[in-house]
Each structure stands twice: as structure tokens, then as C-alpha cells.
Length: 569
Image 1 (tube, rainbow, N blue to C red):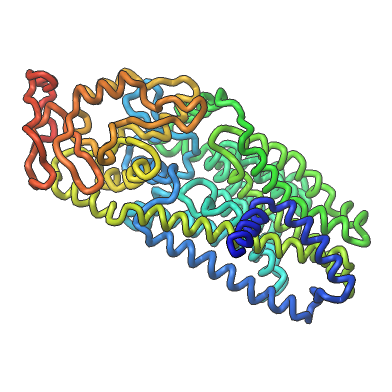
Image 2 (cartoon, one colour):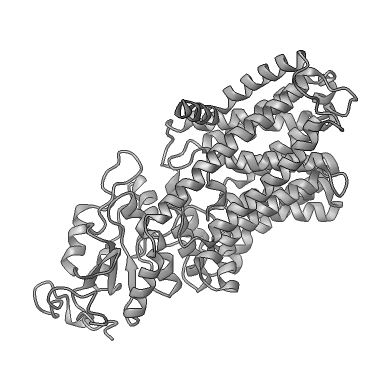
């Protein structure tokens, strides 16, 4: 019986529009029989909701703090973001040419890496400092949403909107906490929203322009998320302010390319152009449309439930009409391979802001209508159910994944300590747990080891038919990396591409080429140690070394004499 109840909760949490409609009907029926309390200013329901709102915000912060202290990553993209953030901070190119030996660039804009790189530089390179920008971005977004709505220092209505935003974030599981552009996008939208609605004219224009440019440099389509913010700026300060904001936005977008020699505009445009051939896919459309519907249904419900809905709709005509292109474009972008519902997260602040403004106007009446109270109840109940269930499951899953490889970070650090003179990199091998073992490759990069190949970058390139460069093969042959860490008992670079048709990520000839020039000569707890054949294996610690010494240069499999002694301590 308990399992049936839990399955029902999970089903309702996954089908939010259906749950919302069911709760609207149930609350309307109960309120008509006097069995549901009012949301009036002095009602017990309202006081309970305020207390619950504080609890939700504190839990949101606590989960972010917990993840900050975990010695691991939860998402597959986080490692490459952390690696590139440190590389660009230490003078390496962020976007490489497709003919280069390195294949590590991804489609995110430069602001992702420059922002995270700043935290790594100031605090020192570590897993915690790599995650901090995302946590602060989330907290900043909630703070600025509150400030954009609050009419006094302690405003329970604004707090309620922030709590609902927390629950909407949680409905996407752990996504908002990850080291990706999403948390920074949410922050940019929140700050831009505050600037457009609360700051004086000059500061409003500057804030919106700076945050919009920052968002575009997080993801190239970041401007879409700022259309509602631009409408608010236009309504408050007029056309000239909006045009000035647009011009300053373009200037902000140009800054990283103009002043950071590591950020190549030509190569970045090349990667974006390459992605245009990725096409669209339909298997995530159900989830994406469901999340979009749950964001929009409360707005529609509050509007339709208002006795003076025609007047309210006229007052907010531009904000409401802007929802059509914003959600239409976002749903299209979310249909690209590897995208999905997380593309809607940056729409949460502006949609919740609009919902709160409409609800405040409707409930300004002394006796709110039965339908409007039912919509408020349904929004809170559905968000609480979906958010809490998905957040709980996500936290448990992240904890389970990281716990599968205890002391993984210590293992990587010990290998670096035992072979201080060698260049070390990490190769993927296998799926699931084996692949997650490679999530700590930033520890190698933080120690100034090279990043030659990243599997996420290879996936993006392969989707457009971009094969590995001959220079990559040459780098393997020349032993640019002295030792590769491969998940234990797995074949190096043996991984399935997540994108259809799900072929092998690395071609057979590349894997054979790697085995020709590298041999496994030792093991750690989690990795096989593959040494370049032109390098004599250093015996820093006998627990690592197995088998006979590596072939000498000139012998079979021994490489060339010219490249033989690189990094040999």
C-alpha cells in the first residue's frame, strides 16, 4: 500500500499540469463547502505559508551548501566547464579550431568560463570553488526576485513568490545547482528584472544591458530570456531607454572577445555554426511542454479567475503577449539534442514575477473570489508536491552516485603526488559508474596537467560529422600526455555516443592508435595507469607498477627516439 502511495506521488510530481488541474477542481469543491480556509491577510493558511516559505528557502540554501562540500560532481558537463574555466584563466585558448590537436571546446559562451574561472583564481582551484558561482547565482536570483516584488522590508507576498520559484527550480531535480550556465542565467535574469522594475532610469538601463549581454555570453540564445525584462524596461522608461539598453547590450557582448586573447570569436562562431546542423529531437518534448504548461497555467488561471480580467489583461497586455514568442522560441531550443526542460529554468523569475503581480492585483480585493483562491491553492500544492518529490529524489540520487566512488578524489591526488614529473590526463572508458569515475578530471587540470580530449566536446563535434583532427593522432603518437588514467578494467576511449544513432564515440582506428602508443603498466584503486611507450615507467610506488618496463624507443611499440624522454623524472 505504501509503495502504491509513493508511486502516486511520483506520478503526480511528473505530470504537473494534470496535478494542477486536479487540485484546482478539488479546492474549488472544498471551498464551496466551507472546508478550505481563506487566503486573506489574517488567515491561518497565509501564516502557515509564510513559515513554510522560509523553510523552503533555507532548505534550498542547505542543499547548495551540502553539494559545495561534496568531493565530486553530479552532472556530466560540470567537469569540462570546471576544466575550461581554469584553462582560460591560466592563458589557454577557450575555443580551439577543429584542426587543432585539442578537442575540448563546448558550445557555452565565454561568460560561463570567465565567471567560474574568476572564482577559481581568487579562491584557488578546487571542486568547491568551481561550484560556488552556481550557488551564489541561485541565491542572487532569489534575492533580486524578492526585491523586485517587495513593497516593504518584510513582505510575505514577495517571500511566497520566492518560495514558489524555489519549488519550480526543484521540479527540474538537481539541474539548477550544477556547474553549468543555468544558475548564472537565472541570476542574470533576476538582476535584470530588479533593475528594470526598481532602479532609477540610468541604473536600470545599465543593469539590464550588462545582464543581458552577460546572458548572451552564457548561451548564444540568452537574449530570448530577456525579452520580458526588456518589455518591463520599455513600459517603465520608454523607447529611448530601451534602445540605449540594446546598444549597451551589444557592447557588453563584445567585451570578452575584445579584451581576452584566450577567447577567439572566429572559433566560437565556428562551434556555434557547427551546432546548427545538430537538428531537433522529440523524445523530451513531453517533459518540456509539461514544464512550460505548469509555468503558464497559474498565470492563465489567475487572469481568468479575476472579476476584472479584461482590465488587468489590458494593463499587462505587452507582458502577456511576450510570453508567446519567449516560450515558443525556448521550446524550440529545448528540442535540440542534449537540451530539454532545463532550458526553461531562466524563465522562472520573469514568469513568477508576472504571476505575483497579477495575483497581487486580483487579491487586492477585500474578498477574493472562489476561483482565484483555488488557483492560488493549486499553484502552491502542485509546486510543493512536484518540487519536494523531485528535489528529494535528485539529492538522494546525487548522494548515491558520489558514494559509489568513495575517496576517488584522494586516489587522483595520490597518483599526482606519486608521479610529480609526468603530464597526466584522464580518458573515458565504459558507461555509468565507470564514466562517472572520470568526473574528477578537473583535479588534474587544476594541477596544470594538459587537457587534450574531452568526451563532451567530442560528442558535440561528432554530431556534425567533425572527426578528430590528424593533429590529435599525432599528439598521441608524440606522447604529449605521459600517462592516461583509464577507469579500472575498462578499455580506453570505449564509450557510446549519447546522441543518435549512438555509435562508438571514438572511432576504432583512434582506439587502436592509442593502444599502439600506450600500455597499461600499473593500477590505482579506481584507474588503470596507461604510460606512453616512449617513457620508462618511473617506480615511484610499487603498488602502482605491474608487469615489465615499457618498451624503449626504437623497439616494437616504443615510439621515436626524438620524443622518448619527455617528462621522464
